Image (tube, rainbow, N blue to C red; front, side, top):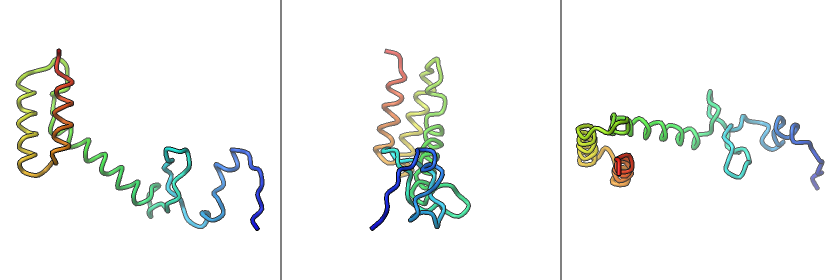
Length: 115
């Protein structure tokens, strides 16, 4: 039967649980406040799934900047809005973005326009 001991919060944060002590753990903290239990990839501080999640977020951000251009800069320029709509349309037709991404970009443009 395992023994339970009371630890202060500092000791617990610095010392990994014994069953996870034999490998480097992912440094990502989950929504519930617990640390991810996945093993970190070689030379990285994140596990495979969190690393891919971070890469995907960077890709989406880069894609958003590429497609929207200067549309969200103030003041709003109708020519830039039309160019962004054209880039989004072409990217959608070529299959570089999915309809859900195109829709979220269009909503972002709509929300940036003056009312």
